[in-house]
Length: 436
Ligand SMILES: NC(=O)c1ccc[n+]([C@@H]2O[C@H](COP(=O)([O-])OP(=O)(O)OC[C@H]3O[C@@H](n4cnc5c(N)ncnc54)[C@H](OP(=O)(O)O)[C@@H]3O)[C@@H](O)[C@H]2O)c1
Image (cartoon, rainbow, N blue to C red; front, side):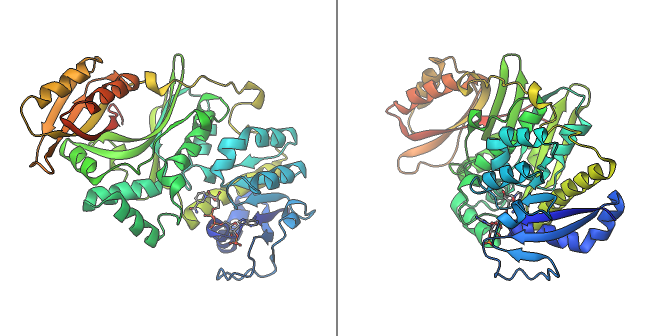
């Protein structure tokens, strides 16, 4: 029987999942393609560490070159993560004539164009379904199922760690720090959670999705990124009271003059579907001209969900091999020569409604001072709420604005901050309505 000979780089969480899926369901997978997926070798930094898996005759080594350069390897599965040495290893594997499957979103978002170019020139696949939202089959859906339909908007929850933290904060009324520590203990957050809580991980995924949707090279550096580390339980409680939930949303929109790319904590109506995505789950909503809104939901991380996507990519390569197909679908859906850089719209000029929370002195006339300061920048107020007793001579004042640009909002906030009756720095969070 024909074989696809596999070498894995990195034997951590996802690596282990890939090995067990191939072991447990290898036969059924072979039935789908008529090509046997044979794991030949795994290279990892610490081969001696026990992973509780019987590898049989699969070679385990600390020499990554035995995978990347090995004559007995057809496809390299890169599961080390990060840029270095992953980028060099992927490039070398492609230059050596090997297909590559990776779960590495940072690599595809920031170095993907060059690597996909090498793959295309050599008639090879560089597949990365697992890099965006783990098991959620969004890359394939956008590259194939929605390929004919112009997409104008993608939004969603692309980081399970942040969504878990925000959900727990809301349900249990706990602070960000308390929930983060608990999430780390339970394995839902990394020991170093920076990339997750600062929005970088979601932005890597958004860069990839926007590239596929709009036929443009991934533009990670163009994304406006805000994390959830400044979200307080007080804001979450206020949002609930007003009929909203706070979610870390990733949004890409095709506008007349360019594209909007942003990752930021956002108030979304309680009744929207995106609000109901809770815990570690990921959800992507795609709006396209003919299909309307379609939704993709599932587990965005974890050993087994991520392995599911990695092995599906391997199966796709096996199927292509069976029929002698090469480069059937371009890496980013659009042919490399047709990718067009698009202008990213300046966040300062984007319009939106905003939630503001101030701490103000509890005395008459303060409300008028604040609304007058906002009015100087053409910001009108939709609602004002004040509740609770004075603490340290200040009371919370919550304002919902009508539509304004971020630039005007920032100017208005500076003016408010300068008022003698305002204590602390005002907090603000964008509001998005009109979602599915
Ligand atoms: N975990 C998830 O749920 C998930 C979900 C989606 C995507 N991903 C992506 O999948 C990739 C792997 O993630 P993971 O969670 O499996 O990471 P992980 O558990 O940290 O595993 C990484 C593996 O790479 C090995 N490694 C690190 N540096 C190496 C080097 N220089 N040479 C050889 N091996 C090296 C490590 O070696 P030793 O253990 O042998 O020391 C470890 O086995 C990342 O790109 C990640 O973003 C992960």
